[in-house]
Image (cartoon, rainbow, N blue to C red; front, side, top):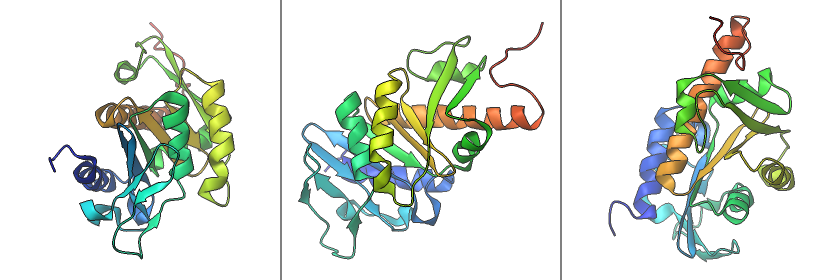
Length: 211
């Protein structure tokens, strides 16, 4: 099994996301699709300590093909939300972050996050500096799995978006592979942080610099 195998990548990426503050308190997670198999981090565990053998394997219908030998490990309630992106967007990887910057973006905005005139926008798919990035915001629910329908509707209604924010909760981000999903997540988080600071200083994060 190579370093690039999803069973090795998922623990490594979860450690990175933990240190970024995206997967603390056992929250957050990631799923990677490799051909007809989806590899998924377990639920409710210390994300920085996941091992390759802790990762679940599922088929493209969401059925578990191989569970960890440790029966205390549970499949995440994020699973149907990850599969929204796999099925509706053909994603190769999806991550769920509890980033504070993502959460604050949902506090400052209504049903849609918007930002423009920031260089980091160019790191997102098909966007340029002068474009306005829009990310739909859905309302949180008591349980993660209850978000499935509203997230699916948001994905359908916003074909330009590669992410969905969940109010006072976090974000789901996807990409064509794990590298693309990770890159987009990093860019989105930067943009959320920028927008938060702009709002704090009384500026509109959509309005460009006034020459």
